[in-house]
Image (cartoon, rainbow, N blue to C red; front, side, top):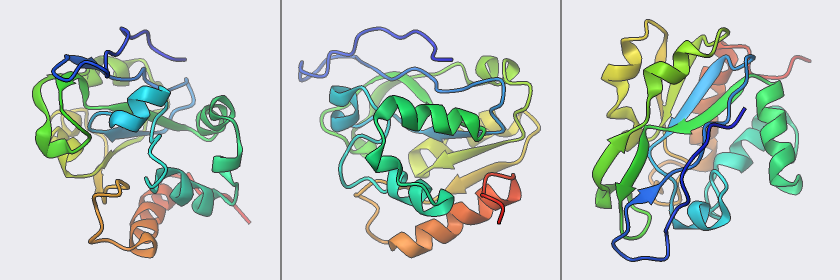
Length: 180
């Protein structure tokens, strides 16, 4: 189920940008929250659309499926099947470029309202520090809440393997890893 959203005006330099719709289903057990899509993601209208973002490679490695080789719609179908939801903490903002530090005039998404529509929701994970600023809101839901290392190419302090290990711990704790 994708929630409706307004058209993004990424081409206008000082435009109020609108994010992407939530990718969730009644099976969503873990909701992964980013901050706000970067320029490449907005242009492609795809979560984690920057070629160097490690989100899809990490998931591919964890799940043993080359998600990058699949069309985007099939990737989202697989996420829904496996109980992973995607959204962002901000619905709209102004941001020149893609750095979270450049976000201004942020309008939050209705995280509590979305969570209320997800009967299987068991945990929330924040992808990076800017998203984690909303942990007070998500923690109020009474579910486990995690701060994961950002998969952004700007997070060069963490190696791929170190990020993968952190993500694997959270995914494993919530039944999001394949069983052998």
